[in-house]
Structures are given as structure tokens and as C-alpha cells.
Length: 112
Image (cartoon, rainbow, N blue to C red; front, side, top):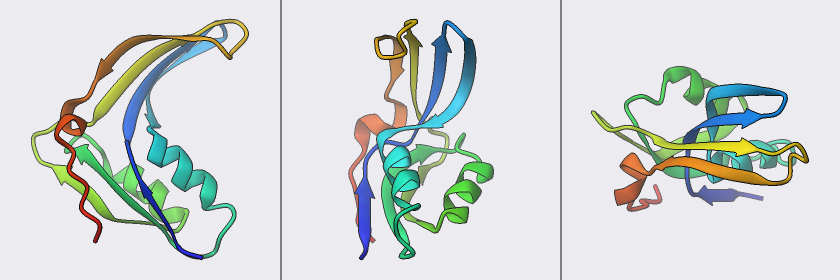
């Protein structure tokens, strides 16, 4: 069965009581596509937008999980959506510290 995922790709800066991780690959479509890749042998088709700061290593990761990235638009000289948050000790409650929509603000999905 084929699956099409449309949504955000992002870089996250995450703080927890146990540590910190900056520039972590995130975004709703990233999590959905990576998770779904474990349940199908068919390619997952992804539609989204990133800036020129979205490196080859991120595309390589997606490709390694059989995710088709032809629908991801790369906006040259643009910056990828960013989110920063702090999770509380229960790891269920969080505060958003910063949101930068960047190229996602003008995202107009194009399904290939």
C-alpha cells in the first residue's frame, strides 16, 4: 500500500532534565514517514519544504528508509523550519521556547 505524507520537516533544539540536543531532525512528516517505513516495503512519498541548510545527510537518512523525497521542495537561500522546546521531568509536559517558520511560512504543497 502506498502512503503519502505531507507536512513539516524541521530542526529541533530540545532540552530535557537529562540533557540537550540541538539541530535534531524533526517535524511531523519526518516522524510519520520514518515510523511508517517500518511497516511497509513500499516507498513512503513525502511532500514538504526545506531550506538550503537541510543537508545531504538528512536526505540520505530518509532515502535509507525507502522514503521518496521527490516531493520535498528545497528553497535556495531559505532556512528550514525550526522549533525549540523544554520538556519537564515527566517528559510529557513541554514548553515551546522558540518557533521559526522560515520557508514553511509560505509552503504551498506540490504533489509530484
